Length: 396
Image 1 (tube, one colour):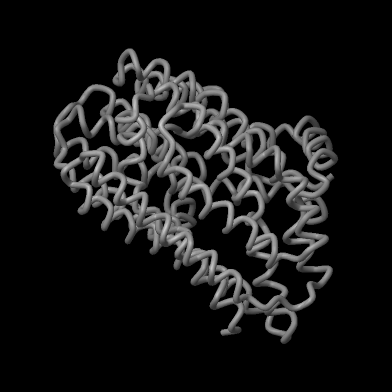
Image 2: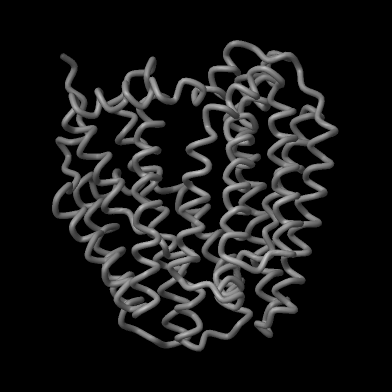
């Protein structure tokens, strides 16, 4: 493996060691924020990433992928340091906007840097294997951090919360230092296409909307992926666990278990269509998802809460690679990035709008928030149910 790629993988693994992951929402509530405010700053994170896509793409084009990654890593480490001294909603909102900018700097640049390094020595055919290793390593790092974080914060007090954030800052700082050691080969046109498909995002968005308007099947799949997919589970599960009296250490253990199972199910998700066909596989996943979210809304029991959360998280992620395949079947190669970016923007925009609304409802009644999410999922499945004909491509 190329030294620069190894260093990038190590750097990103350290950046993904979010030890505070299992107590994020609890920490913000302890600092006096409401659930609506907590989910609002998450919307700010999403919107910030969308807003800064274009300028960060221009930066990476001009100064290189390494320095784009360095900028993102530096902002992440700085954000965690400032986080330790913030106590207000507007302060946390600013940090989340900073994290959105950091994510925009790193988004795409990491993939292009890996591809370009392989391309420089004629090993671009190894890209899929290297990307799998890259994604697997960061997923493992997230799961490990969740396990450790859940154990350390088992007392659930501000002192242990701050310990986890300090550990997260140190890990992020180490990741930044590793990023500085990367030596970037002059990028190729092919790698540039991978990284900076965002730089003309406004034109892409317009072109993507036109294709969605003209392609009924793709539009239906895109709307299904927006309205029939659950959201806010990761932001609300900690409060749900509190209501269900789940042992404190299991806030992290549950996240670790779900991360491992998600990696496994995503790897094998493609088998579902072969076993059950398009309609039945979609129906099975959708039904399970509805039952699980409904269960979270009405069942308050520690063991049941753990099982329901893990199951809902795993099932919700299992459908992602299947829908990605269905979308790609209707998209031509020359504008694939354009349309996928448009669908991603629509999905993220929808989630950014809905999070504060669900947070406002959860402040009044947590069960109602989960039941309303369930109702939206049911609506999405009824209005945009995927049938076999929807995934068949008809060449004109």
